[in-house]
Length: 238
Image 1 (cartoon, rainbow, N blue to C red):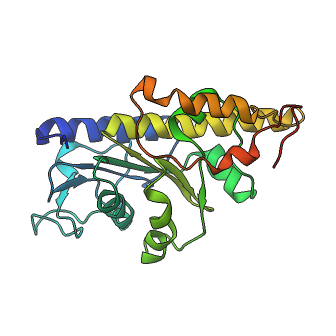
Image 2 (image 1 turned 90 degrees about the vertical axis):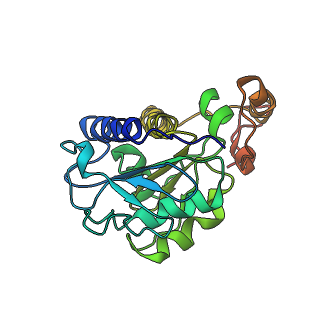
Image 3 (image 1 turned 180 degrees about the vertical axis):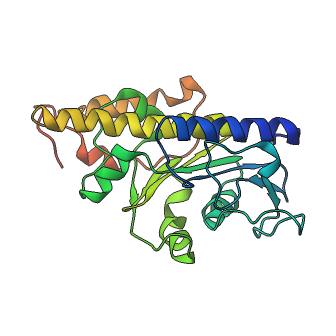
């Protein structure tokens, strides 16, 4: 397992990604939380109640794997750090977590619409489906319970009426997955406005999954959404 051993580099990266997410409208106000696993026992994360568009490196918080600040005089970490810790416990290959509220993707959960329709080859190949965890009260253990079963086979998932949770080998990997989730949502929205999406066929989806190793992608994926692909006659099986 490889960690970001240089804490100062990790602080710079965390601030850069936090500001990017704010500037791109993935979060507003003091929303969102971000973290990097520095070692087996230490997490670097964003504090609670701070606008991520204005955050600086000195405000970031070091915690243990129970979410307790390493420095008792430091700011408190986000109340949603529980989600991040659950991801780290579940996946040894994950070293960074991003949680934001991208408008279109969240809108799909509010409307009760699936984001898992296989329409974009890149999403099929790198992510598989993008599930929606059942609604849970933010910042509570309910959220952890709602996502635990999904974490092992998903690098990106939606929290119903809430936001997106993206996991990565590093903070940039997690950020790129967040971008991909919102891109999938925007593309699906346009397709719905134009008469409805035409999914990739089951054969096309299977072919994409078969070439994952070419891109160095070996993590397990939940690919149950094959049933949502179109049959050979182009008719969706959803």
